[in-house]
Every structure is written in C-alpha cells, then in structure tokens.
Length: 313
Image (cartoon, rainbow, N blue to C red; front, top):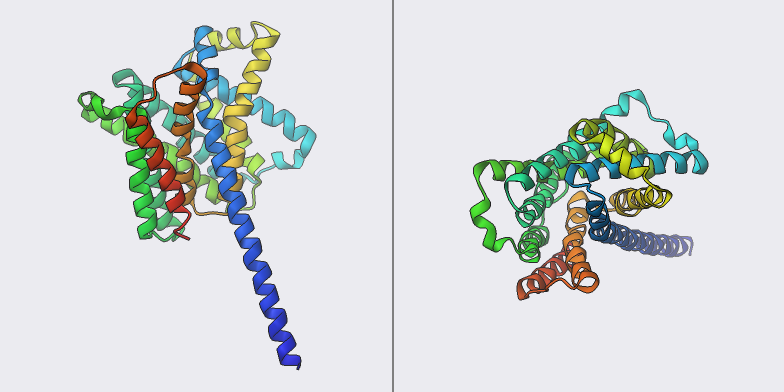
C-alpha cells in the first residue's frame, strides 16, 4: 500500500512538473514574441526622429542613452540592488553592450551607406544562424531537423518580407562582410546574455549595463551635440525620447531576456524574427504602404518558422 501511495505521489509530482514546464515554455514564447513586436514597432518613432533631423547612428545613440537613463531611474525605485554587478563578471556586459550592440550597429549602418535598407535587414537576419551554431558549441544546444528547417524558413521569409530579391546587384564583398558582421553582432547579444543569466543576473540588470556600455561605445560615432539639442528641445521631445527608449529598446530587451531564461537561444532567435513582419504590417495599416505578394509570402514563411521552431523541443 505504501509503495502504491509513493508511486501515485511520484506520478502527481511528475504531472505538476510537466504542467509547470509547459507553462514556462508558453510564457517564454509570449515574452520573445512581445519583444519582437516592440522591435517591429519602431517605424513611427524613426519617422518622428527623422523629422527632427536625426538619422541612423544618431537615433541609435539617442535610444541607448534614453534607455540607460530610464532603466537607471527605474532600478533606483524598483530595487537598487539590481544595479550591483561583480567586477569579475563585467565581461558579460561589455559583451552585450560593446561586442554585440555597438559592433552590430557600426556594421549595420555602415552597410546601409553602401547598400539598401532591405539588403541590410536581410543580412541582419543571418543572426539566428550564428545563434544556433554558437549555442550548439558553447551551450550544447541540439540542432534538430525542425530547427534547421525553421531557420531556413526564417531567412527566406525575411528575404521576401523586406523585398530584397531585386537588390542583388548591391551586394559587394564589403557589403557581404558588413552584413555578416551585423548578423554576428546581433547574435552575440543572446550568447553573452545567456552567460549573464547563468551567473544569476536579473534581466533588468543585463539590460541596464548593456545600454550603459553601448552608449559609451557609440557616442563617439554620432553627432552628440545635435542629439542633445533635439532631446532637450521641448518637454514633449524629452518625454518622447524616453518613451521611445522604453517602448522600442528597454522593454523588448527585458522581455527577450525573460524569454531567454526559459528557452534555448536558437528558438528565441527564430521567434524574434517576427520583427520585420510587424514592421511590414504596421507600414501597411498605419502608413498605407504597399503590401506585395512577396511580403505576404514572407510573412507566412516567418510565422511557419516560429510554429516549427516550437515543435522541435
């Protein structure tokens, strides 16, 4: 009788663990999807900054600085203990902020100057390839057939969504190298964040130090006087800059880290590829931009990749 009760208790505990694991997986997927949606909603903010005569790296620096300020003020109120890091772990945040964020932005905006936005966007989405390969080497994540198929669908989907097919002529060797650099830099955020998460750091802490180091590294690349002048030109613009930093930078990176804590890097990278889909749909509904058959094909492929990536575990 005692053995039967123990088995029953064991089965009950196992069922509870399975339900908890499934719940965490769903929550992680929703976190990463929400992050991708936030990243994809940057269009209206970019247009407002463009009207204020800010472009490319100027906007990156402004977003990094505003995000750093927002997170610092938030953590002072929420829990200032989250501002503490161990000196021996600082390499994790130099990795997310400089090796990843600053390097990716340098490559990405250098590529834009010699190519097109659509080419740059597609080259950036080589990131899931780097994430999967590096995660397999560093964290022993399995590269399954479903993951490989999802990865292929993601790349093809981004090609169709961005309409890059007609821009092949703009791919010089330098453009390819810059594009691969952008993809690698973008991918390294997941890698260094994983190391920081394993060392017990909170998502808020990772995000704050990422943008602190990114701000320090990218300020010399942009016109800081113009950025400061725009950011302080009015109360509305100051609040708009802070909200932009929160909505398109702080919040999605925090959500992404929360999702990363309960799923594999490769899966998270594929799910986050919802970003160009959101950007395309937002352009269509909010700004009446043309939606082509190729765009729709790409949207379907990316959504299929997301579903397939979640069948691989």
